[in-house]
Length: 62
Image 1 (tube, rainbow, N blue to C red):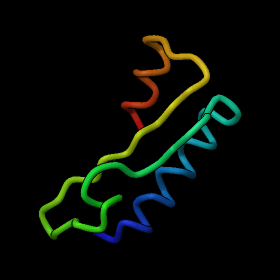
Image 2 (image 1 turned 45 degrees about the vertical axis):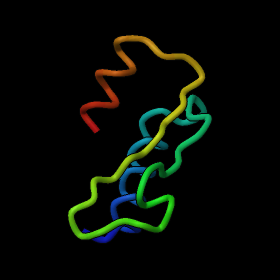
Image 3 (image 1 turned 90 degrees about the vertical axis):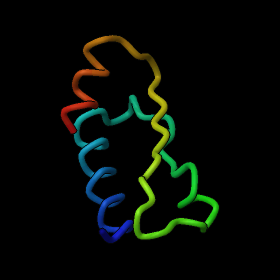
Image 4 (image 1 turned 120 degrees about the vertical axis):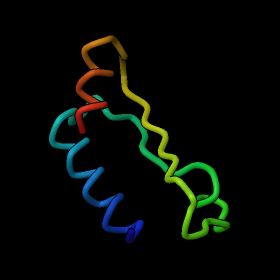
């Protein structure tokens, strides 16, 4: 998987769905540290202005 393609698609979906509610989106873990391998998972932190069950459900669908 190409990390740049993945992040681009994720950011597009998040921006389209949540707009100004997004405060931060960034990599965490091995990709952030430059230590990712072929079997590494992709850890992404997303911070919203407010969070509730509906926001989490919508996020999970993305």
